[in-house]
Amino acid sequence: MGDFHQSGTITTLHNLADRTTEDLERELMGFSRTMPMTLVLPSLYSELETDALEGIIQELKDVPYLNQIIVGLDRATKEEFEHAKEYFGRLSQNLKILWNDGPRLRAIDDKLQKLELAPKEAGKGRNVWYCYGYALAQGNSKVVAMHDCDIKTYDRGLLARLIYPVANPNFRYQFSKGYYARYADGKLNGRVCRLLVTPLLRALKQVCGSNEYLEYLDSFKYSLSGEFALRTDVISNLRIPSDWGLEIGVLSELYRNYNERNICQVDISDCYDHKHQPLSKEDTNTGLSKMSTDITKAVFRKLATNGFVFTEEHFRTIKACYFRNALDFVEMYYNDAMFNGLTIDRHGEEEAVELFAKNIVEAGQQYLENPMATPFIPSWNRIKAAEPDVFEQLYDAVELDNSDY
Image (spheres, rainbow, N blue to C red):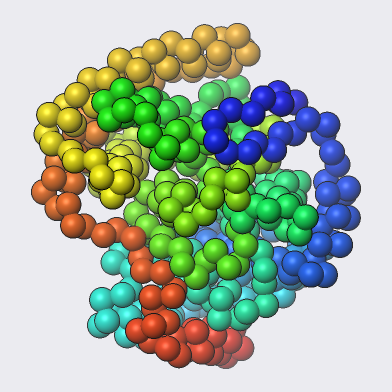
């Protein structure tokens, strides 16, 4: 059970009374008559072989209030797509699978590439973007939720709590962000959020001065969570980053387009665990190393759009402030873990901080070398203006894929 404290500028919906999933679902069934709901599941084909996704399917198959489930399937051959149809076909809801590597969706992507409007790199951001485009093309949902397919501790109450704030027509929220405590199997996890994002935001306040955007980001208890829900109207003008900056980028877009009173965060799980990325100290293009660089660049770019002018001296100062703050957080979390009887690798924690500090400077250098880089995929409003029948093309491609094979 969490506390009831409201901090920062974002409304926090706590888990105060352990309300049952059945009770939440009864209310969501009532909402679904006027607020039809869709769930988006971005998935690699390889995840079909994991216990995590199998557990998710077993929980989801009897969820009564969902109008539809959209699966974005990456890295799948024709035979693997056929298997995915059988695998996900156990779900009782209306199901559509986007075969992102299939010839029909590739043809649409090629057309957008020629217009210089397609996602520049493969990955979760591209997958989610096309799933959102298909949801808009269908036009039969008012609420869209999304979560990852590698959650090992999944239960259907997570989805109910996540989607409730935006599905409730009596609430004003356009977007809800899930949060939770990242621990499992007696260990404290979530290094990137604990040891990069929070101390970096505190360092930026010291160097750049406190501003509304930094206060907004710092209000989120778990800004990197992959679980969020939003009203469908939000999607049309939403630009989605194609790199590891997806979660921070989406929060930044919401900040740009909506009043903070339309945004909330909600406690969706007492214990959360998923697939862990390696630190990748020797390879800056993978794992937490690339993730930390992409996230940091996303924050720098947003501050620049708000008028802050960065120099090399700024990045060196930010690194120094970050490093001191992060070491303090290592101490805090070590004590917190010990108090709760959890294990924590303090040496590994400090190794991560050293890597993140190095990557803050690297991210700053990359920004200075290419300040005009635009990692955001264009909004669907922009795409529709350039290719007016794109939704019809996308709708037909997915329908034919799901009926042909």
